Length: 141
Image (cartoon, rainbow, N blue to C red):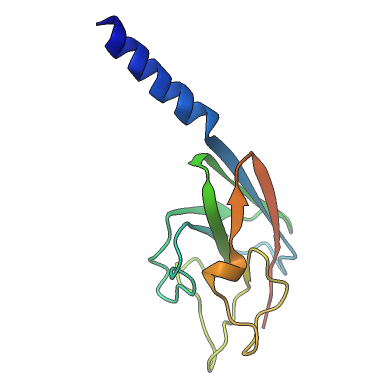
């Protein structure tokens, strides 16, 4: 019985040592209408995510001001990428004009998004091996 308790204790200790918090800070919102959707990805090939259904974890945060934060707790070490969008009308989808989003979007490691700089997991991802804060500026196209 002592071996079982010791083994379970070691597993929990290992998880605690290798679990990290990720804070995402979104700046540059043009107004305080709606919410910001934070989508966290942990696999190659999940970005771009046009249907918004390939994420690992997702949070929606109401806007109060021009900066919004989301916290993802106890994540295992690994590579992650974050996409965000300013859902101004709370319809849970990115509204588009002809081809481009009408609402603000953003990705980790991206300052601009255009036809020559399309999103992908490899470029947007970063290592998570400690507690981290990532800042993303919203882009209105």
